[in-house]
Length: 460
Image 1 (tube, rainbow, N blue to C red):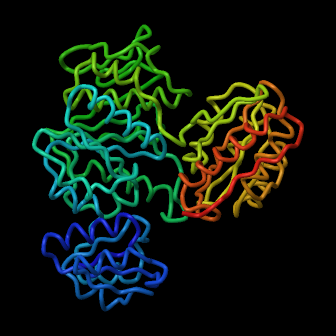
Image 2 (image 1 turned 120 degrees about the vertical axis):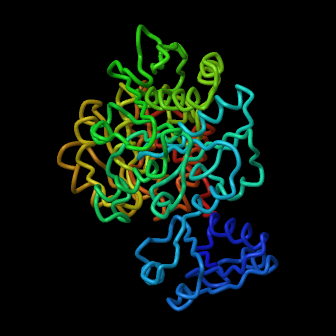
Image 3 (image 1 turned 90 degrees about the horizontal axis):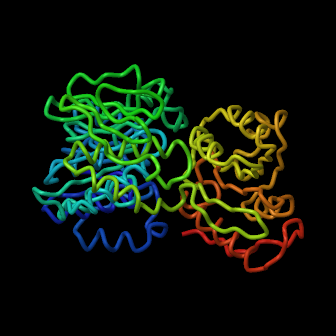
């Protein structure tokens, strides 16, 4: 077998398969020097290596190929392999064939990580043996050996992972929303949506699908195989979770069950009400009792880099939403703050249209502080409608915000872009932002003083 791409997922797949006696070739465009200790681990496991590029002939000599999520599906070797009838599987497809117990798979453009983490938190509190894995940070293949027949695995699934499934079948599938994202990778929004909706394609009548009735794209979908349930924060439903009389209730053919009070939700923003509705539905359908769902929602601390409170000083609040890597996620973050807002935007563009940000920022008398490779494009699209400043780097953007902020204002990192121009990933970007904020806090100065934030920015 061939594993393409030796980041976290590719290494995990290579080691998993080699440990089970497979003849593994691991291929990466980077050199041995760039991959470092990874190479020694793979060699010790008995993997053959192809480094510095991908030879098409290597792809054509395999029984199965597993590309890492970051590897584009139109890589010439993958195209040639498909043409030759060689199976190309994502890591979640491979892992699902070894996984024991039940599987909840959660996807969507925004809210996946929060909903996945919350669902796992609810189930753990209910005493269910639970595994949380996937795009949330740990490859599913790395947790297969921890699964048992009584385990529930909660998987965050990206479009890149769903792109190459074959028989992958969740017991409960959840699609939160569909808005334009990754258009630098997918040919169109329609193709992106089709990829996401593959999550349903192998489900049967014994399985369940949960969809957002308030989403204009999803509201037109109705998967043919599984039992379909909806969630809505704006209307009443015959089948699924909605809000009634201040309660979140779940309706099905057995009647209506109150799961929790709306006031139990401590997460900021209306989008997080949707995330709670989805997580509560998934937990209920997999067998968690209502009391455990309510307790889990009340005790859930939130997720790092998702509208994460960092500090308040001088009357100014600082929030880290580095995970807001597309425009829709940034719109949801903006909506969570009613007052004047200094928004740090930019990074690596993903083919996005930034003009929807103009009106929400104008209503908040806000300013956009632009960083990274996308700054010029963002300024061209929104600069005529709202105040912008070309900051370039995260530390400069934060210093500009601090110089201009007054007591009662909010400084929000919600970049609407990927992070790979200046950072390793969104987590790295969020950590650096928090370091910079705490450096400002430690200086103990007042807004408008211009005291610079300083933090060592290192990659890795």
